[in-house]
Amino acid sequence: MADLDLASTFVDQCFSEMAQNYCSKDLSALLEHYAREPDLLVWHSEGETLTTAEQLSLHYQELFDQFDIDSVNFRVEKLFANQQQILSTSLWVLSTQRQIEDEVVFEDQSLRATHLFTNQKDRWLINHLHVSPMHVFSG
Image (cartoon, rainbow, N blue to C red; front, side, top):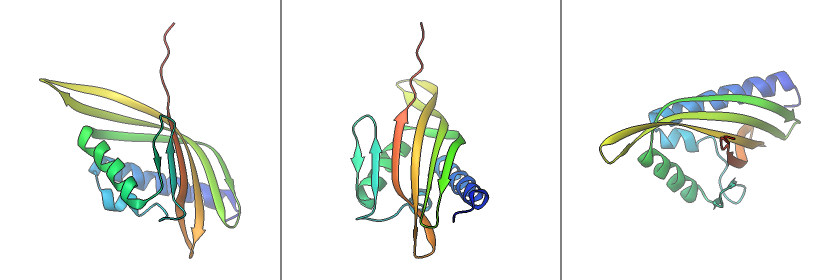
């Protein structure tokens, strides 16, 4: 998929589906976007490394158990593509709520992400994901 317009359309569609999966807590649909081991590597800048579908499933289940996700917005910043790979960098904001004691807390979780998609048997799957939270600094 060397055509950047086609790659951009694919990534937007994939990320839109994933955003819906987050909000509906549809774990199985979310996992369908990922490659399986040994090709899978998900790395979170706060120290978590996932290399199996089971680890990824547990990670998302913990996220879904901790938060209700009201909305997900993303913006693709850069996109590179060839016949076998698509690389995108993007910004994500997950508007979440969670119960802390007797109070519902609303938070926006801002993330920077790099997704590497590979063409596997005529299907584009996330082979590598790197996620870093974006901290807000006040001064």
